[in-house]
Length: 389
Image (cartoon, helix red, strand yellow):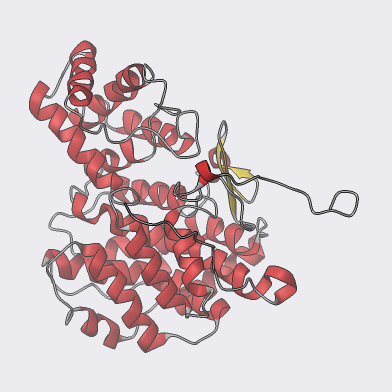
């Protein structure tokens, strides 16, 4: 309030209509924020600090808004491990769902089934239960969709990501670096502010008082789109096109020429640009450093590094492009592939498994804590009538 009058944060004009509400505040996010120049922060903590933490500690930070003491962390881990095992009925029912189509369809359906079988109708309880169970749900989905057989029994005592890896029936034995890569991928994808599409959709659906599982299924349908979570799969496919055209060891000038040719043909250069950031995505910087340290001679990693340098130079020549720099999707897939998970069809499921954490916590805030515990009202934006020509 200013002089007894409401503070005007933004003035909406006609030019702001049909722009996806981009940049207009409609509420609060208690978990994370994205600064255009500094990147992503979880509860005011920088990613550079958090990537050294174990996943369970980061989840605690997001859920409670503070760093845990050692005793608090051990109690939280114990609680998650108790909640983690899914009922045998869930795996059976997932394997009765259609196997065709993109696995994100199956993942969304599996979340609905989990809610039908195990939902408590309590946002806080369901959030903690789903966060604990989602590694097993994702493992069921991937194993079934890939035709790898029934999921190995859950062993939560191994650790949050360690258990997920051992539940997968991968054709090749996973190495230690795959677990490390998945931990890093998980932490970097837990949350990304309150207005990204999947998070907003999940909260919007929950505003009708739909339960957490149904809200999350809707959120995952939003995440599945190529403009959102599927971008990591598309970025890897683009990188593979570069290698197919230029070979495994292209020169920098060849990569630059390929980018120019791609744009000249009105095709997309995947893995670059961001709706909020105006610098290289700090999440990408973390993954590039890890990938180049672990796999400096891998063709995917090496070519991704060249694209990281050459693409922004070309994209930056267009004054309409506000952010020509690499985003997290440019390198997350190549790192997972090099670390022993060469299955891009499931990259978005991995993204969804991680983002379930942040969306769940944000739904708890909006349903149980916002407005002094009353919760936010049902989402109901105004639309203006426009006669079609």
